[in-house]
Image (cartoon, rainbow, N blue to C red):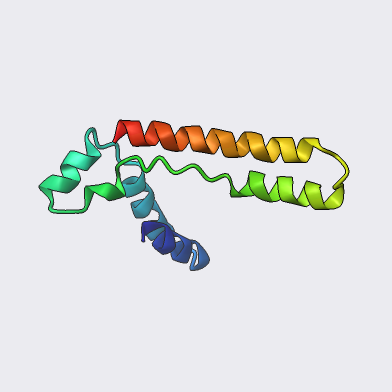
Length: 96
């Protein structure tokens, strides 16, 4: 929300609003999840999500497989990535 507001302030050349938003974005709060809970807000917004986005890597592997299907290492790379993701899922299950 603040980022959208900041972008709007940039488009409108509103320096005063930009400065106010920067001050809020630069605030250092020691225990953000605890502060959210105290205020009755959803602390999942500030907790680590542990999301790993591999779509770029997967797309690049697929593109290279299509471009040069004779090379075997693209398939090897895809299998390697699948194994890494599988291991990460197992680790995430253990931590829960």
